[in-house]
Structure formats: structure tokens, C-alpha cells
Amino acid sequence: MKVKLAYSKDEELKPLLPLLNGRINKRGYDFEVIKIKEDEIKFNLNNFDLLFIPLPVLTLVKDIKILTNGSNVTEKLFIKRIKEDKMLKLLVSGTNSTEFYLAKILINSNIMPAFSDYNSVINYNDGDLDLYKEWVKYCGKVPIVLSVLGSVRLSDGELLKLKVIIRDSASLMVNEGEVESTSKELGLKGREAIECFFKLCREKGLCNEVKLSLL
Image (cartoon, rainbow, N blue to C red; front, side, top):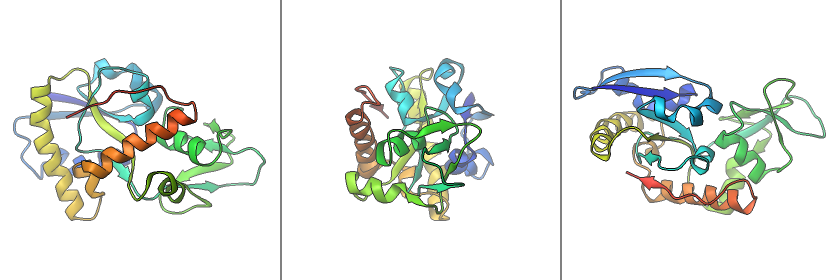
């Protein structure tokens, strides 16, 4: 079976690399991997079998089935200033990116998204403003889930089959120290992280109520 997979950031594919590179048995699945702009994801849900979906998009579109495996997860997230200005203009991959929403929620709701003429960037190693440190104050010692694998096209049965090989793939990357353990399986901490994101997002008036369908 051919599976069309969409992603917007190279980091998202890390948990799936052993699967895509043939290091584990694909069990009859053939993956066609296509990179699209993050802001185009919500318009392309019906054009792909699986997509890496940033959390804010889940408040905009109903009936997305979410896998608890293969998520893009981090425990390091910073804003790095390029130059000093009164107004933070943050270079973003998309206006629906989880990183941009977290910057508005945790640092300053007046942060402006920018695709050019920016004065700050997101960094996953170091920076001037530690978003994860602020996150822990509100949500406790849980990871930040940046995007999840979701689908509107595939049946529950097909998704449950894909879960097995995606989990096996992510497990290899966890063992090699390339991704967080919650990338293999969200588990309690991953679910708490997603719930806390939406709680903070609603409190800031940036998100609507969302009902998640996790597989």
C-alpha cells in the first residue's frame, strides 16, 4: 500500500528515518514523502494519508485522527535575538506553528510573526529566552509536543497497522539518542503536554476548545 506522507520540517522525519531508509520491515507499505509549507497543512489534510500536524491546526480542523507514535517532541526550545528592538519580530515557519504559539503564550502575546525583516529566531539548542524553562513553570516536567502524525483519510484499522512500524522506527531512534522517548509513544507525559498546551492556549484566547481522537 502506498502512503503519502507530508511534513514541513526536516526534524519531524527523525523518528521515521529507520522506516523510510529500510532499516526495519515496512510490511508492504511504500512511503511517498513530500515537504509542504507549514501554513498549507490545514488545506491539504485530504490530499495526504499522513501529515505532521502542528498543535494549533488541531483547533481549526475537526475529525483528525492522531497517532500517539512518531511525534516531533523536544525538551529544548529557545528564542535567539538577532538584534535588539522594542517589538519582537520572530521568524516563523508558519503562523500556525506550535513554536510561534508558545512564544506568544509564554513570553509575550504581542510577538509578531515574520518571514523577512525579523529580529529573532527559534533555536532548539540555545538562545536568549528559554521557552522550555517557562513551559515547565506552567506544565511541569513534561516535554513540548511540536507536531503529531495525523490523518483524515485512513481508517482506524489501517492506522493501527501503521502505528506498529512507526513505533518500531521511533524506538530505534530513541535507543540511538536521536529523539525523545515520547516520540516513540506519547504516553502519560506526552498527553499531559498536549492538554497543557491547549489549556494555556485557551486561557490566552488563541485557541478554541478541541476534542482529540488519539490512536
